[in-house]
Length: 229
Length: 259
Image 1 (tube, rainbow over the protein chains, first blue to last red):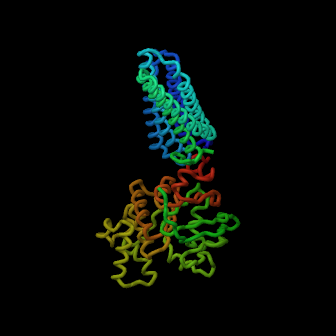
Image 2: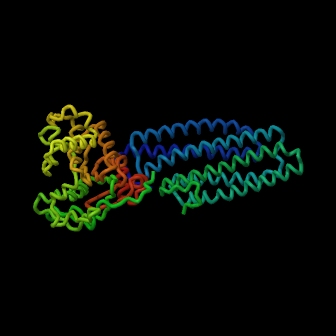
Image 3: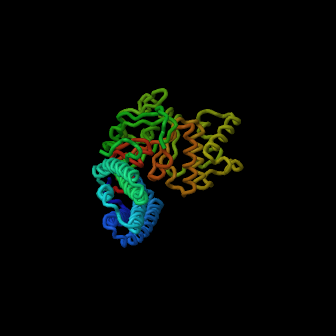
């Protein structure tokens, strides 16, 4: 990635503003995910409202950033690393926005569970662990973007495999519970939705990391077995 | 978009050095020019791109003290364009050149295009008529001038004059067209017309174009060469150069970071 300055300092300002906005949006999504996980563990469903409200801000930022990207393309005709940064950002914000949506889904699932009673203790640990792993992925992906750090991006991409495996194991457990005791089916299905949303958040963090590799190295590693170094 | 076909060579610079007296303006340039492709030369002022372009048709021979080293191989016959045994007039028969500022002769539109053919000894008026029409059509200006072929060329607009110069260059069926910033004196519409024309022309002729306009290089060329201080810094497919250049100096230049 090219850190030297453009002849046009205005162009530099535009790009750095864009990056700041992406990180700001990332910060919001991170709080959404983290609050959703807390609500799951504590049953504190008051925070659901905040998570939903934050989602509106995230959506607005997505639109604002996309708009700024369009302006930079129209005005500056970016090339090379600048072009890759703009393309990458416009994909990253889509993933961030969707990760935010998933956090909202978790929050709403939590509300359903706790409104109908309480979370059966045996479900807590696995999902929470999955959620912590996905949240770490989001943080690291945003870090990798902020510092244009491909080794960090590679860590996130590797972590996604673990999250996927853990998700599958939670599903197996829940199926066993449902077969043993059909009264748990309603709650179990809600928990499946929650686990699924968490797993998707991990996918979005992975996508973001793939874009970081594209921005820095110009390699498109999506849908390949190719790893970031 | 990928360029899948393996291109054949039309020309090739081999260890090309060029001196204006004591000043070394080109430093061991090694570069292929692919057949029926557009190759753009980009780089800041004074980087040697025009000097390089003008080596092809031996324009530097016109001034004493200029000196070439190395070769420019021209295919398929594998002639060294720079060899002292090769007559520059012969070379210029095979290459056409279009300059930054349109430079029509102070003659009629018809005569501007017919001139090169007459110099080559063509006097049959039917042949001349045919070739003039073909060249004017090739340069996408026929419809605008067909009813006024006997008017003076300098009365045409800038963009038309430039297309006339392209027609003049095309009339003698050149194998390689050299464009030296062909649109820098033209407005965006005329520029668009020339770029469209370049796209058409490459179906039958190889094109080497010097341009200051990076977006133009990105739009019209298949290959791009970045030159700096007389050296060839990077040569590659245009799609790759503009998305992922290999050299930091190329990157700095095309992203507008070079002071």
